[in-house]
Length: 395
Image (cartoon, rainbow, N blue to C red; front, side, top):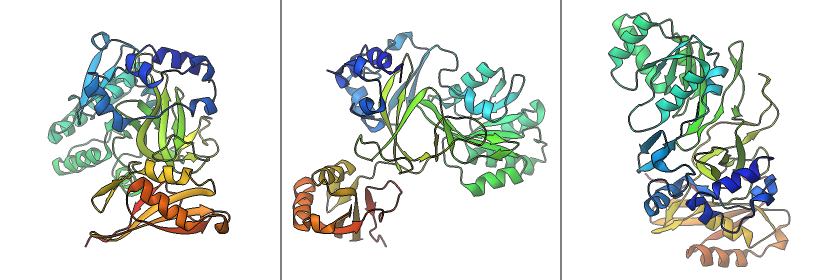
């Protein structure tokens, strides 16, 4: 928080942030409450921002041609990389896996256009690990490289590691040197982690990041035991907000991951990742004291088409704002395609204090669609972060 005013002031030096943060007194943004008053800029906004002001929407403080690399992800979305050491802050999850100077890593993230492989390169260089730049594909060559060069660890997606292990078994190759794996970019279900551990890679940790932010959070372990949740990177401020809004939720409640990144080249102020998670109370048994999150819990963009009209989470939030008696709201779309039924479930303390007819009118006013209302007690709705639930039958 002590550095937050300087971050806001630095961001305002970039034309895109100057526009987004117009009128903001950077000196006053020195607390979570003050930060929460600033607008959320979401990942889903980047394409239009970048089209209006190529290549990065005016959000980089460092001029684009003075950066180290310029990446292109599907969309297309363009991402920058500056010249600083471990620019993406990848050394921490690697260190949590037990990687140290002198270890050798087989880097199986893609080197083609997107930044993931270079995130791993930066972390490895900071620790002092050598890297085999394997990339993705060419499974037989991957196995040959592991068997010949004997790397200590794999970095890449968990599904590709499974493919490599299966190919090694088919080839009769010895890849037992690779005892550790840091995986990301896709979900790691418990069944897949167990399969990897049972098939020769006993230490498997996952990290959570994005092409815009780099490392956001990472798992930790003690004596091979993986601890619950993921430890937040120390150079980020995390907020969990109600989808479709910028309103922080209570600790433990599921919502959208919003981060503020202290990156001097590409500062991100209240950047909505579009991912869902929740704060996990307490500190990790590994000893790191920073905030933990529960990991990736789905996507926050729950926009749903009802009777040929899109309904957005922000519209549900707008309806709820009009009625202070509503603690939480969830729009459930049921029925079948062509015979949709919209019902707004509202948590209230006193049902008598709410007029359902007024709520029905608000639904029609905001969404231009007819909807029903169901009042429920506080704490009745699931804690899964959903603002819109599509419960229709598609068969």
